[in-house]
Length: 279
Image 1 (tube, rainbow, N blue to C red):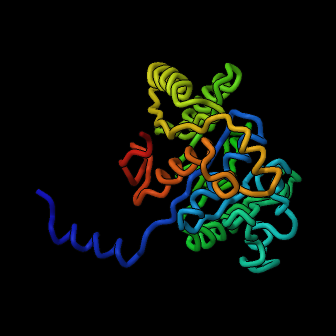
Image 2: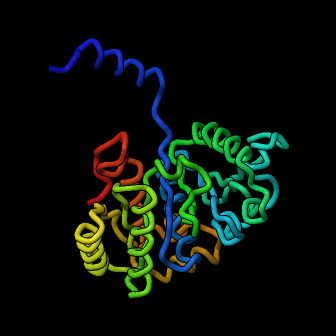
């Protein structure tokens, strides 16, 4: 029988602590431009729906979303961790309506990323995410099987994939490496440049293979169709939901934003939660 006093105390503790930051790390088996476009438009769609969104560029090189938006100059979270600037100096407001911050701006790749830096960076990130409702991380899974921060390992992890054979193969290999590094846990699958029917085939095949050969559960996050209005909006420096609200991609991103903004959003089986993200 449940302990009522314990449950009541735990509920009060959670109320006083406030909601936990919602952190989703995105990895991709698609070209970097496709990933950047997806992140920008999803973040803009979430912001358009009234969410406080922060997009963190955690890529080691200069091909992350901050560079795509031209917001990779200046200080990074690592600079804050080294007490060389204030936290508010690293958060830039994108014209699409959300905040952007760079994690290291290539410092890690340059060999200047010490264990002490890592600890301080983790603390800085913890402070940062408490200022946002939804934190989207443009991440990379390094060859050594590590993420820049342990919190990325504990966050929801979503893998972007397209309908091409190469992308599907790369996405499956990525999931295999993730499961070997992080253990048995679920991952989300987001299919881009695909119709709903095409995305269902991709997801079903990947979910079957992952379950059979890796004992890993995948969750469908939905899909975004190929749409020329995405490129048109990008050339205008705007999100597709803002520039062309009736476009097929806009409808898809609004649907995705609705899923990501659900209270208590978490992948099934993830430590700390059990509700579904998928359809």
